[in-house]
Amino acid sequence: MSRPVCVLVCALGGEGGGVLAEWLYTAAVRAGHAAQATSIPGVAQRTGATTYYLEIAPQPAAPGAPRPVFSLSPVPGGVDLLVASELLEALRQAGQGFVSRARTRVVSSTTRALTVAEKMALGDGRADTARLLEALHGSARAVDLLDLDALAREAGTAMSAVMLGAIAGSGALPLPRQAYEEAIRAAGKGVQTSLAGFALAHDTLVARRGLPQPDPQPQGPLQQQRKEGRRAQAGRAGGKPAVAPHELRVLARQRVQAYQDEGYARLFDQRLARLQAAEAAARGAAVGADGPAGNGAARRPGGPTGLSSATAGPGVADEAARWLALWMCFDDIVQVARLKLATARLQRVRREVKAAPADVVKVYDHFKPGVAELAGLLPAAWAGRLVAWDRRRVSTGREPWALPLALGTHGLRGTLALRLVAAMKGLRRHGQRFALEQALIERWLAAVQAGTREHAALGLELARCGALVKGYGSTNERGKENLLHIVDHLAPAVAGGMARSVAERCAAVRAARQAALADDAGHAFDAALVAHHAPVRAPREQAVRWFKRRPARVG
Image (cartoon, rainbow, N blue to C red; front, side, top):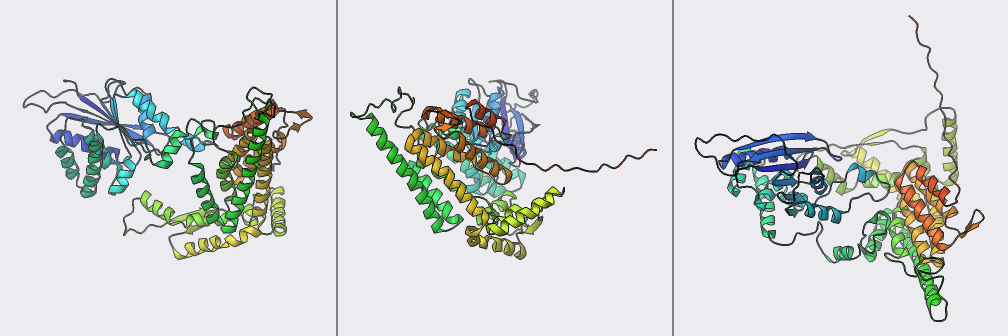
């Protein structure tokens, strides 16, 4: 082969892509190959991305031979090796045509760094990893997959070192292992940890060569259940497979217990038990209608309802468990203080700033609690007076009251302040917010229970509406309003003077939920309500503030 070996390296910000490109260039030169490296600044929808392009002569340069002429940038279909530190970043380059089925070998991490679009979605906006892998395998000549992020953490080194080891282990470049190691030593910084990460990734990929590529997650019993249930659960909100139902309930209960206490966890169990009883009643009714003694017309797919007596995918209680746990663990100032003090959070901060064990890291947390946050922990009477006082202030044109705070949580004073707030967990049960949230939860669960007794499909659609309640502040309030509007106007058998079948109500609830998750402004949600003959939401009161404009000076 006379043409150069073309290498395209894709890294996210802070992963050492420039260092990796320098190592590759140095390794090629030290092995006697002519080479050239260029960087291509760019921006990805995460932490920023920069691509690096290298061309390496396939054979060591002969004495006196003319220097080859290299290109400064890659061309579609002209890349021999694509290296990516993130799975979607590899697909992004493939989408631009740089990955060729006849020529390109891809070495990619299975790690995902969610894009802004994935994070902004009101529902589960994550891209399906299985589909990403399928597209990548269908685009490239060969694909080598490793969890490079896990290998970097295991070796205690940067991503660039393990990426270099994966490149060497793939055998895609005409360079010996010694040349790569010499390039790391020549850099003179973090040599030992970089060599350890290089060796770990190199040996791991060499050991896997010729074996089937693994999935991004280890295939234990739980992961196998996820894989087997993916097709059956394709109709879930967000279309993502979930963990096994029993595993999800255990995790949900643990979260509820950690949030409050064992009594609160027992309330979670009791609520799920009610839904399970409704499911059992629905199954008994379905069996009775489909049995020899019943005509079964209303339950069979071809009957008037157009619904099957058995619903594919998760049961009503299984679906409701995840959303119920999240709703019961609503965010308040006590929960925020507890999360800020979590050891895992402090460890993550130190890891993100790459602090050494002996380094002193100072963390300043900024808070701005308002009347709503403070009133949430007060009894209803006191909270009502406080909220009314703040509304009077707003009606006069003033800003809602809030208390800006900046606490150094690395020090004693800031830590004690947060621990004091976190210790108020016992007051939560007596506060206005707790009572309000429990009342709204009961309204939702009552609708799910009633819908399940009528038909399991209707109960499942109402249970999935729990996905609307998320976040905090106005986002949380809007989600609860949308959910209750669906419960009040789309779930009943008779609404607005019109009688509707179960199938019609299932379709209406599903359409309204999907519209609410697709558009945070609410226009799609109102359109879905109108399409299914339900009233739109009443406009909310909003204070109008007037500002006096100073007259302009003349002359």
